[in-house]
Length: 271
Image 1: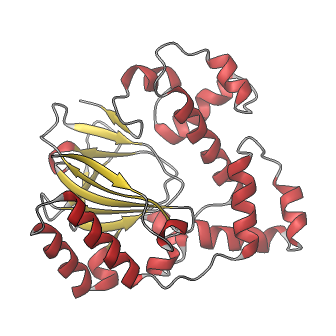
Image 2 (image 1 turned 30 degrees about the vertical axis):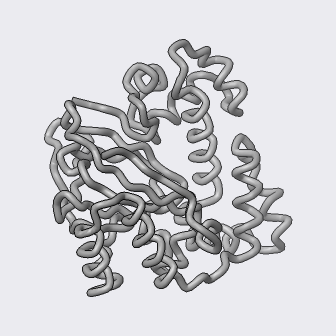
């Protein structure tokens, strides 16, 4: 039992940040808040043939899907329950990387999770069945990587989008998109439409989320945080601006995040 993850071999490493396997005892808390990500994700539940997401209110209305889904990238946090997070596998795609697997307009993935069976039919079902009957995590990771390699069509991102992603990830505090658009030779409308199709969100949203993720990485292991300094270093106009962005993306304030997070920055225990 444990948590294993690795970077897949080329050419998958250009599309995927990590494939992972989680096999752990049930957690003490019931719900977790999952922070939004820059890339799409694939989830395969090997404990239950179901995945669940809950509304962010007192009612905790539950939406259910099959045991294998692909979705994201995210613009808002999601709430899941830990009862299904016992034996789970997954894939973290790089921004735009999931297009090689599903060929979908990424805006569809942002709108909601998609059942893997709906995309791959019997191939998705057969994958989950083989994973269920594979006892060792390293072997499960091998199987998943081999399956991905067979399914990927390897369409390259448009060079304009690739360049824009590199700039915005290198300088997430840079919100002046106009000079970037000017470099492309496209109109602002055409550039924005192409970026949203291949990444799932507009360039300004991507820059905002990248900047937020950089702050999360910076403060996740700190007990005492100078938020005014973090805001200034992260390119926010002031601490209030940073707090606003945390509420938008994480559903909580920065101070609540630091007080609440556990061993994994993306998963915040709730109750």
